Amino acid sequence: MTHRLLIIDDDLGLLALLREWLELEGFIVVTAKSGMDGLREAERVPPDLVLLDIMMPKMDGWSTFRQLRAFCDAPVIMLTAMATQKDLAQAESLGVDDFLTKPCSFEELRTRIGRALGERSSGAHDRF
Image 1: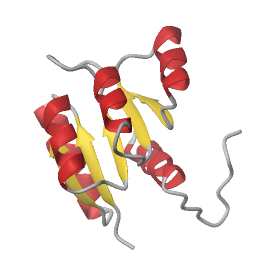
Image 2: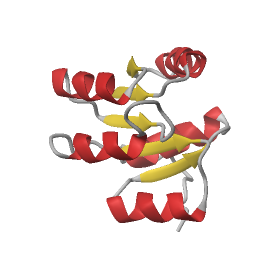
Image 3: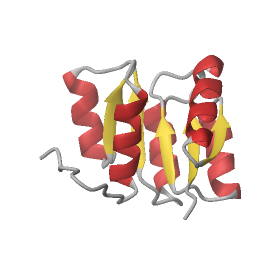
């Protein structure tokens, strides 16, 4: 089954790089450069998973996440440069599925996406 990923981030270079790499991995990728654009895309065609940045102008990732949860239950991975204990605690309290700090390797991102989508490869171990 091909999974549809929505990436919401204001870094256009990162959006292009992630789109290219994830499409090569076999995903259908939709990108949005703002929280509002991401919400519109998620309403238009619900994603199987969302990669969401925290630091974005106008509507940050926290506000985007709260609004997204009102109509979409897809797993959300926060992919962000923000990595304070406060951010991690907020992510956990809101019910964010996973939290990954930029920069990260494509391998780590692929592992986290697979875990969030419920995929298991042979020899894979849970991190907990």
